[in-house]
View 1 (tube, rainbow, N blue to C red):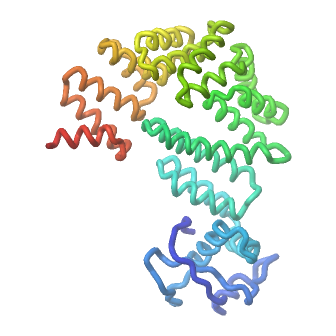
View 2 (view 1 turned 180 degrees about the horizontal axis):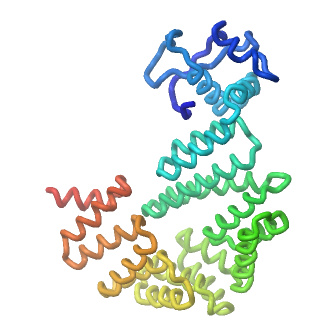
View 3 (view 1 turned 60 degrees about the horizontal axis):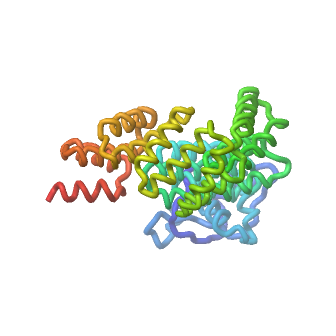
Length: 370
């Protein structure tokens, strides 16, 4: 069965030639008074009955179900589709995951929208939609498109909200939501999700992981209101106010690397490069050895003119995250600052291969060709 597309929808009476193919199915009978929606190929205006197929009819039904949930015949179309394609949940889920894995998030979400219309309360569908939105947000973040990434994260937040509102609770929804809130530095909600998961867990490995993360959150004081307030202030372009909050947090939790990362982030955004570098170095020393910390440290080192140290940090970050556009772009910027135009061109060409919309790389290579 083809995946959902965006062609025109037309309605027609049930052809006699198709009725017998469905009438024999159990628990379903065709209602000849209800017209069938048919999806035409993009650009096609008129239906050629000789070309009519089940694929066109089922795609039309999926569109009506997904886009017109209030349609009085939506439930009939839903039962019709499930009669013809009883395995559609598995088939479409696999297709959506494959599309998302290949970076085609738009098609993956379109497929999940169709499934959501068919199975509006299925927790697996809600979870996969949330994971795809989260994946697209992460892809945008790695490309340096932070504003768009936050928009997608907010959409994912709404999707996880639907999951967490289910009764009874869906264990995998709680587990994955916990990681989502961890990435958003909302450690209080993360702990709530992991704590809710524990009594429902049937996977011993995931259960131990949830326990370990709860211990980490509690032992590091990451539920502290000052930490969350500092993060929100800095993200909201109120760096000076965020600095006060994060310093208060560090007075009580001086060994928590996350706090030093927040401090460095605020200082870097304020252009206080040396202080920012010192904070990120402290975060690394305390266990925050990850690509984000090293990338941020490298930016500060570049600005103070320590190009050798900056390159070392960027190369270490790239080994951890080889397709991160922000890191590769920063290597290009570093090459420019070092006077190596050829190396810079190579890095920016790689950036465009990963993200053809990257404005910095496109502008530089355009000027280079002139």
